[in-house]
Amino acid sequence: MISSKIIPGGRVVGFLDLGTNSVRLLLVRIDPNHSYAILTQQKEVVRLGEGEFVDQVLQPEAMDRSALVCRKFAELSRSYGAEDIIAVTTSAVREAKNQGDFLRRLRQEPHLDVRVISGKEEARLIYLGVSSAVNLDGKEAAFIDVGGGSTEVIAGDQRRYHFLSSLNLGAIRLTSLFFPPGETGPVTSESYALLQRRVRMTSVRTLQEMGRYHFDLALGSSGTAENLTDIAARALHNRQRQRDDVLSYRDLKQVIEMLCALPLEARRKVPGINPERADIIIAGAAIIHTLMEDLGFSKLRVIADRGLREGLLIDYLSRSGHVRLIHGLSVRQRSVLQLGRACRFDEIHGKHVSQLALELFDSAERIELHSLGAHERELLEYAAQLHDIGTFLSYNNHHMHTYYLIRNAELLGFDQSEIGLMATIAFFHRKTLPTKKHPEMKEVDKRSRKGVQILSILLRLAEVLDRSHMRAVKHAKWRAAGKDSLILDINCGHDCQLELWGVQGQLKAAQKVLDREIQINVLGGKRIDRSLRSPKLSSESSL
Image (tube, rainbow, N blue to C red):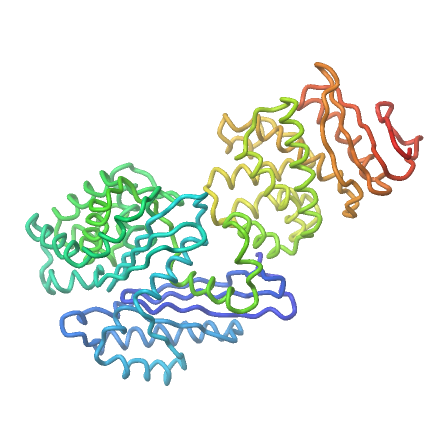
């Protein structure tokens, strides 16, 4: 497990989101090197807002459930040695007339100082949690998070938000107002139209403000959006929901028609549905449906398990001296650095191998040795940085451990295909060459297999060019030497004998993959032991 090695000085912090529907806990260990490891994530449905939105009073049974879960989560956090528990609560408590009584109870029983945050602060934290997990790549996005009591709507890009809004619309709130307890039959088209009318009336100013912006995509981050996507995948397409899946407007309408036609008990049995959401899913769907319709979105990209709770973590890191992991880096760069540091990698070596791999990639592109593009170059950069993280588990066969860690780390900002490619490139940085017979290559689509062969050989060469981890080789690049041969220029700052032996050991593999004869040309550095040099090793400068 990544969390098994603890650096002295690490700090355990819990982040608790007491929402209208659920209580969520994120427990992390933050290390002095600005990395963090997730120790546990917990969620429990408590329905704190159940029965509240008619008279704005939290019900005794709902408070009992919520206080119990908060106490258990606080005990769990402290058993891990948590020094701080950052706890916030949102819509249900924000509007409750008996808010003070409930907060005092939380201070006395689980000894939690729970802060009530405003709707806009809730939207800001949701933005932080979601934007830190996706690679927007210069795009403008609309963020939609449907909660139990409120819906947050945000306009923003990767680095900042432009507009924050919190609407008094939520799956529990609308269900309470439109479907009294005991009303468990199908939902008529007239009732559903009334739901949509309420959504439009409540969101009119937000929709006007959002209309000022151009959006390249829409992101949905709530449990409602996730569950609707689950239902669409299972009931309409007979498959499981994939990471970062998309909910199309067309599929959403079909799901809503299907759900409305069923009484509650039959609704609970729909493939993909979370039975605990069956009674509130139609109200939540009406919010997403109406917002997508009025904002003109044909699809909603669903970001699973990211929201306010994760935003609390990002906010905490930025406020407590860990800004180097948060600011100045893209989501992908931050995600890769986080994984590397969590695995205690040799960061300087990883960065130097990455630099050399990119120099080889760029010089190979200039002489038309490959036709790969910026996308493959970026994945090579990250695979090179992470190529040795498997040594965290064991040096023996560490390329296999690296593959496993990358594949299973849920790197933020990457899709499953990109994660698979990075893992495969790193896997083949040593030992055998990639062929279609390898199980790892079978998971790569056919179009990308040749690219993996080229990228992995460039990584192999870059890795041995820093064999000593001393950055003895400063630069490396390819030159064409006729139609069927290449020259590999190696610029040595000082003694690079180990690196040259390493390159010679990879020559046969490189010549096979690149289909060229290769000569090595050494620039600079101390005199090389000629008795150990390949016949094709030439030298210039001080040799």
